[in-house]
Structure formats: C-alpha cells, structure tokens
Image (tube, rainbow, N blue to C red; front, side):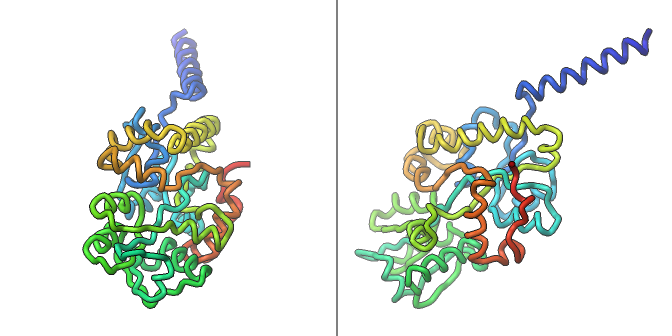
Length: 304
C-alpha cells in the first residue's frame, strides 16, 4: 500500500512539473551584456529581474562555457566561433541588434568625405565591428588617411569630447551622452554606408542564442519565450516610453533623457535566425576569421 501511494505521489509530482512547464511558469534564465543589446529584452527583465543576469561584455564567452543560461545575448560572431570550435551548444535563435555604430566629430560642417584627409580612430582592433566599419567605408570609396585604435566605445567617446579635430567611430548610447555634453558633435550612422554597400538595413550584430538542452527538454518554453522576446524588441519603437522606464530602472541607461534619444538609434529589431541567415553570412564574409574561419553550419541556426 505504501509503495502504491508513493507511486501515485511521484506521478502527481511529475504531472505537476509538466503542467508548470506547459503553463509557462518555467523560469527561463537569460544572460546578456549590460548595454545596448540588453535593451532588446528590457521590458521582460523589468518584470522578472531575478531570471536575468547582466555581465561585462568581455566575459560573455564564459556564459557559453558555463552552459547554465537557457538564452544568451551575445555578438553573433562570438557565438558562431564557439559553436564551430565545439565549445558551445548554443544555437542562434534570432538577431536582435543591427548595428549601433556611428562616425562622429566636433569638426565644423563635418562630412564623411572628411575622413579621407584625416586620421580615423576606431575602437576594438581586430574585431568584427572595426572590420565592418572599414569595409563599408571602402565600398563607398572613403579611405582614411590613417587608422588608429582604442579599446572601446567609451574611449573613442572620450577622445571625441576632448579633441575637437578627432574623427571617431563610437556607439550608442555613448554617442547620445557625448552629444548632450557638446552640441557641436555631428554623427553619421555606419548603417547608412552599410546599406549602400550591401542593400541591407544594418548588419547582424548581436543575437539571442538558445541552449540545446533547453530546446530538447522544453521546446514549447523556447517557442513561447521567443514570442515574448520579439514583442519586447518591437516595443523599442512601438512603445518607447515603456522601454525607457525599464532601461532606467534596470540601470542599463543612466537617465530617461539619454534613453529616449539613444534607444531608437540602437537598431533593435527581432528577426528569426533562419530568416536572417543570409544577412549573418554577409557580415561574416567581411571578416571570416571573426567567425572561426568559415561560415556557420546550417545546424547553427535554430528553427525550421
């Protein structure tokens, strides 16, 4: 009799667990770098912050190795390289950001053609961002007199503010913060040059990756979360005020004034991995070594 009762209890617990998963109560764990990519899920994070972990951008690779999060937001090339090397089981589920990079200067009447006669300061030497920036300039017949590199967008932002003659590549939201300190700054989106070169509205920059184990054990949970993630991305243009409130509350951005201006310039847009494949490959072919030396295999892309 005791064994029978124990069997019934075990069965009820199992059914309860399945029911919880089906009802969407599964606690999806997500890791993301704290910055522009995190804005794509800001409204979701604000509702359940305990399920989301913000990490420094330079440590995002460790999140893939830990294999704990159900979803990770990361640069697409980083996820692709780790997957190719067999150091990650995470597949690309969607592209969520499409380029938040800008050429900027305090120079009076600054135009992109001025880059031809000047030193251009980029951030992140030997990175996909700098490679795409230089390729887009070249395709548009703009060759800098010389190229210098600093570590990150915060560094080029500082140079932009301190040197009135500098021309830099920076990123949102750093650009908006700089403009609020100096109204003489003029900026041009890299995406405008990229579109002239490729025909695409921005380049596949950051993606939402899904863990293989989560797909195997909780396929419906994955699908449900992707629907919510797409809705969150859409709010960056359709319901900006909600995203602004979430971004400030979560300290992704310092204040509402910066958030209101910067978020629309971060090119946040949800596109499924399968749909975005050709755009991922276009970006990868600009600097294939950033993707591990080859285009991602078909099984890197989640979805039918």
